[in-house]
Image 1 (cartoon, one colour):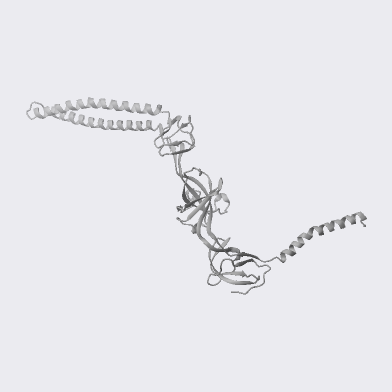
Image 2: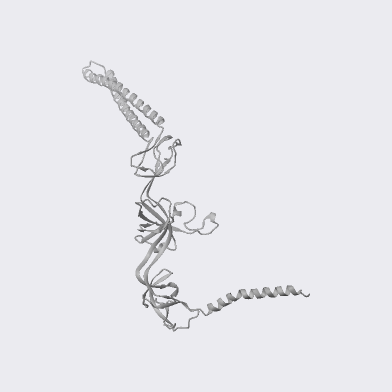
Length: 393
């Protein structure tokens, strides 16, 4: 089969276009093959080795203000963001039920006290009769039966009076409890703080029979706590007292500094009864292990209230740092020598490469601190794809 001439011309043009388009790439490949080795100069600067963690900012003190009385919320005296003093009335619950209970308990107490007056009179009468019998019976002015009856009546009256006194104490306790329950209809702020959440609005009915329902949440925002999640791969290198700093998404240019206060001994999963060991595969995960994180805690002053509850913090925990350290790229480090030193290849002004042993300090896998073996200004080889073979140390 013979192609028409115009098709042959078209195919030839297409091949020529492909070759012309590939020429720059071929030239770049050729240029790269003859590129000079990549080097870097040893210089003095600050270096640090850090552990990265993601944290959540929370108030140092957060209190759920709950209701200890059941009923409808008839008044809510605070709004979101309000500053509340300790002892201030936050909300009021309809006191009708508690007031009726108190009045009923007071009526029972009054009735018991009135009965006690009657019993005291009966006791006095029985006491006088018994004393007369004690006088007349020895004189045979009264019978033994009369004496025994007077003694029994006196003993019974004393017992009845003691029982009534116990009932009065019970009634008094009931009155005190009812008075306390009535006072619970006024919800009082237990601490000074800022209202950060309103859980139960005005008009809602709450039931405090089994648990105290939360009405509002108060937080002290002057000091915040950052809870940083540290992976199990890094937690063994972290300890309280280490320097930490973090930034927030809303102001990445500002760096907050603090000191690590504590590292929780167990992950959050320990608090959840899931039936699986912490970090182990759960039944719902199909046998796939999940990552384990431990919370590192530190506090930060928040006088300007820039930090808010629930914010995300990008945390750096400083394991080691040095100022005016002699550093080179970590990629320039070669093999490890028997005594722990590392091989570094030095490039002189003529482009000659020589190997040298150096002792490394801080190595954050980006930059490495050189303790001995180099001086500032010397150039080290990072990529030796086109470098001549140097000597071995």
